[in-house]
Length: 374
Image (cartoon, one colour):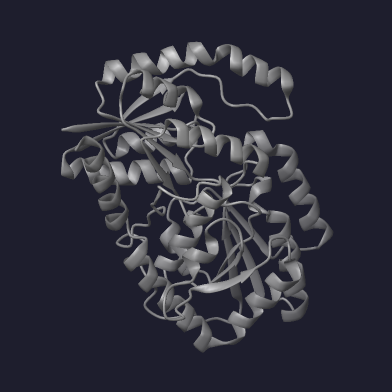
């Protein structure tokens, strides 16, 4: 059996963790064993991975600090040799065939893979790194990686990787995220978003657009948020609470916390909104497409290339990041045009099956790994 060491820099369950777990579960049926390596912590990704019968190894290493914190950068550089040695031990103990690193600034396991002479897949799945730093990290990735994988063409452009890369979009399980049998009916329209409360999700913009939309539709809308409040973002969550209070939306916003049944959550929506200021290949978009829910999203990362298919087939409307007024207008357009809503939902489902299904993503990973062994 082919053994792949899949290394993640966060133990909290999010997009990259979901991809590794879901794809790993599929690949286990094709004689490819995924060993998931995460930092020591109290995150929930270990529990979810074990439910899928994936092996999890916890590693101790220093996370890459903010470029503005000089002291933390020096501490990280000082600890880098120790972290490399730690990953070398894991590679040898697990007797893996391939090392798959997730994240641009995850240097230690990449160096360890090269020292151990293992094929290195370097997977870039974000656009949050400032452009000047992205150019530097892109150079490092090109220097060390055996194969470069990006979550969207926009991610490759961000890191100025102009050629010799493979695009593997995040997957959605089209069997578990199913389309609604009929359009949702009701006088109250439900507008939803999926995302933990952190600044990158642009939740303030979502609240601003909710306020604008509510004033136009006179209380005939409700806003649902599926996402956890993070201990690391308490101050940001408090600012969102203050904004909700200021806009007098307390009775119209239903904050549901972590939602395990995303399928039912999506079936309750008339429109799914993504208000992020930074993304790569956001899962929320893919899940909404699979559920046949029309989308309004900010033009960040690979969102446009995901939403827009061939032959004018599109699953949603795209607005500039931070433009709450345009976002509200697009939401209202979909709510008031049933034919448009149906067309966007139908197209989204078709694209989800053709381009973004878990089966297609798993097959892309299998081909990638097989090419490295050959």
